[in-house]
Image (cartoon, rainbow, N blue to C red; front, side, top):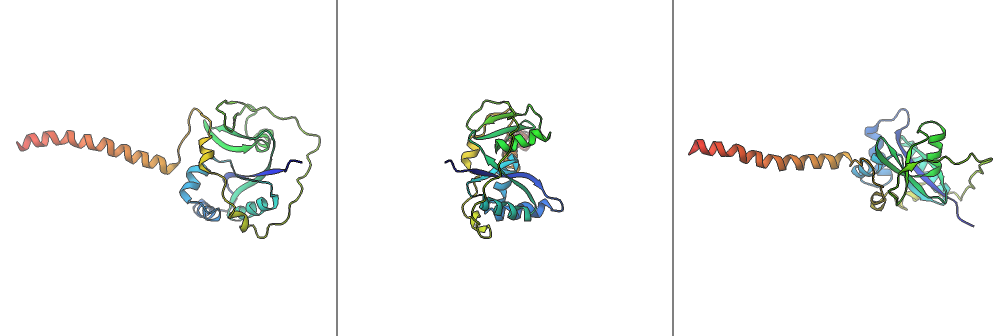
Length: 207
């Protein structure tokens, strides 16, 4: 029998009453990752599945801990069809379990023709809604996992290999800090020849 697996999906939004200046740094500390990485690799691609596991209780503990800090986060089953990237505002987001994409389309939050691509593929296509099941069985509860902090030590699943699997889109934007660094490098590259050009007439005046 195949083990049921679930994905912890970080929505990228704040719960009511929370401040981003405190929530996101606290969330980075909770998941034991660098705050800059949280913004550049996670929030920039949210909604995004940050962890998959067959241990539902551990994922629920992580969800509750993140929600206590003010982060909107959900748990969705992962089916045999694998995960998807979705194209929102011409930017790939995800990966995401198909159950989450289905929920967003059914609720009208995302359009029915939203573009998706399977993980590992660059073939963008319109999402095809699955038929409504007659009855959705509730997931079987797993054994309790303490206070939930033990689950964090198992690792944060959003890694560099996930970024490498991003499908090609019309625009894939880097995070804020990477764009800032690129802007500074471009400025230095342009400043040096500009300075040399201005230096020539000054040397002429001196001569």
